Image (cartoon, rainbow, N blue to C red; front, side, top):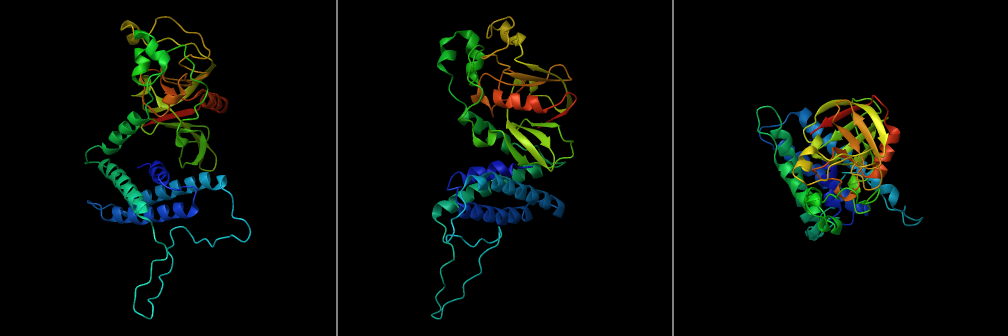
Amino acid sequence: MPDYYAILWRALKKGDFASAQWRDNVFAQTRHMLLAQLRDTQPPLSNTEIRLQTDALEAAIKTIQAEVAPSHRRPRAGNERTLRPRGELPARRPTGDDGARPKPPLALPPIVWVLLAIVVAAITAGAYAFIASRPGNPPPTARKVENRLEAAKERPAPPPQAVARPRAAAAGAADGDLPPGVDGGSTEADVAFYFRRQPVFYRTTHPVGSIIVDKQQHFLYFIQPNQVALRYGVGVGRACAGVAGLRKVSGKAEWPEWQPPEDLVEHKLMPPGVMKGGPGNPLGARLIALDDGSSRIHGTNAPKTIGNSLTIGCIRLVNDDAVDLYNRVAIGARVIFTD
């Protein structure tokens, strides 16, 4: 299923997303163009498949409106504007007596059409990925390429501490990670808005209190009542790159100890030995262990790596998010890994 939430946010951020009129225009045009695209798809999609796509788009629109609307002031008395339902187009003005065609009720500047073209291209790629994932079709590749390009653009340069150290820091410097012992803080103000902890609309059959890890999109969802989930941005380490299916929480620890992977020690990319818990520890402030004995959800000493795929660790969160999730999840809770 295409991530319509991320697609719409990329389009909205190109313009004045604080403007309700701007958002409504983008939402309305996206609805019309997605429906037209799905109906023209070859081989044809069923009504059920079309409905799933349009429902997912509406859910993303609803989530964005709930996130953006409370942060802006309501219009003062005397400045109220008449609002029409989302997606409803204004009535066509009649032709004048002189036979000239009247101007359209809303003249969009050229930049709007450029942005809408970007939205259409992203939606088309997402629809193709959905169609290709059906039985008998080749696996989707468009979104994977896009994610890798985005990750490469957002990947920070190695910090001075990592450059100053010899080969022991090489593994961390390769993917923007910080070497053991260097503390990058408990959170990161530069992390993109959609990777910060926030409640979102989320429909699932898994019980309240479950954790769902979307490794491809780098999101972790903690399921709450009434089709709501707390969404956290995560980094995916090599130890969890191949993990899939159902796990359960088997234990929790505060400021855990960390031991570097054996292969990195053998290649002299990391120093041997056990590092005590504390600031600068790669496992961060909290650890949630899973019942397979190797997978775990933990904090990090490098908050800027959230949203990336990494060499060290499993599923990492910034330390503030790790503490928040640690306090919410119970022993025995379900943890579902998806791709």
